[in-house]
Length: 151
Image (cartoon, rainbow, N blue to C red):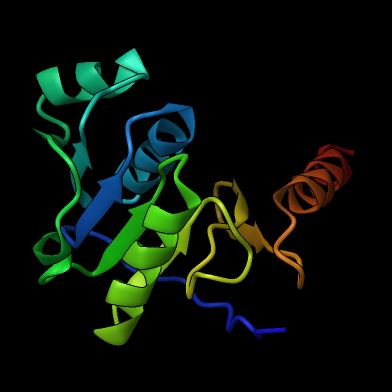
């Protein structure tokens, strides 16, 4: 099992690529936008209409086509958010070979960066991840922490 080092990273104006146009891609995009990333989405089609709205609002750039290997060049972070496990694995392998952070939504193995369950308070931020990369368990713990803070 891989060990993931917990770290908080300034994403302000960092070049991030999201490959995919569905609901999970949208959730990842929203999170990345909250932290100031500059995002390009590449997908042959947009299934989640909210992604199109973000493009129309000029919050992201959008390229409607299949992913190409050269799309990873000069990226800080890549999110493989397609429903194609093999494509997401290929994206991971390409990015990892160039020391680029890669989050892959379809596996717990073929990635080198995880998104955490996050709670941002006024004076602090708590991020939670599980050793096995189980987002549901991390979310459960985050919700327990929030309830404890509200007491």
